[in-house]
Image (tube, rainbow, N blue to C red):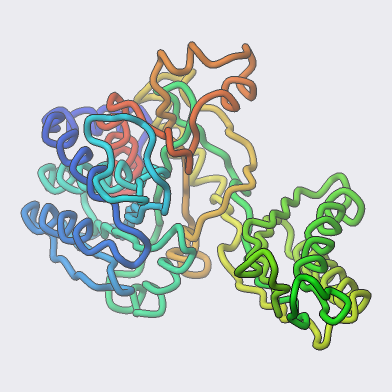
Length: 413
């Protein structure tokens, strides 16, 4: 580790030759051709090609569609840089000249920008060999949106097949006036679980509801009752979000279906609170089904998603200090704990410190036009991640490369 000013100065030197137009073209191309989770074949191939051209030893197909590039330059620590690659099933509405060409699929979370930053940082650090010492491992991760990409890479032996990390580093594009780099030491992102519910009824004709057991009505009561879980069964000091995101039942207006299906998403920050809320969900669903006289107990399946993301405080402060030197002290602030979730931490084996920060990307004109004067009000008024209007400003392409480069150099120098 070197002094922040020294690292920042080296990062400026290392990134001074960035081909901005090329990186912007690369980003536009990725944005035009989004791919869903575990389908990132074209994206992975494009990243792999750039890594090979820069001198990395590249392995494709890790965890199905993941990419890993390794570049060793003398003795020293092993630093992993991670970027996720998948898009979302969202129909783009930005009107951009380089909007998605894939119907119903869009890079609405900015992973195209993550891949661009990752490629740019990998190329800049490769070109600067001799100014740093250690091993750089570049990870293009699939399926972050599906929640299984990091786990798939781990199951495929990413920690055994490649140099084991001493630190793992990552970042995410976020709404907010472009030009800021929020850092949060400790807990920064929440755990996420999905719960699949099947309510079993007795199907029948819509004209004779007395001969059926309507699972749609029962499921509707479940949805309504679940709205009280957070407000009445969770302490005010605990942060929990429970969302019913999907409700499927029936095929025609005059048919009472035999079953209804619900999909829930739970966000928590404490494992004890998580277990309590999952138990309450089970109690509510089972209770409503018993009250309705359902012919069989409901199916309730918990699908674990992402664990909490807890930045190593010392590592986060170290990298935040470098970013302050690089971009100005006013550009780095504590973003606070968020209810969003990430599988990034799974790439750090037990005990290995990791850090995950943000790069804000809202164009100045969009930010200024948003209503309100406070940060929270402004954030609520601009397109955020997963919005069909999400369109990061191209001005963040180079700074996003510099954040990764400087973070890596904080340990490689």
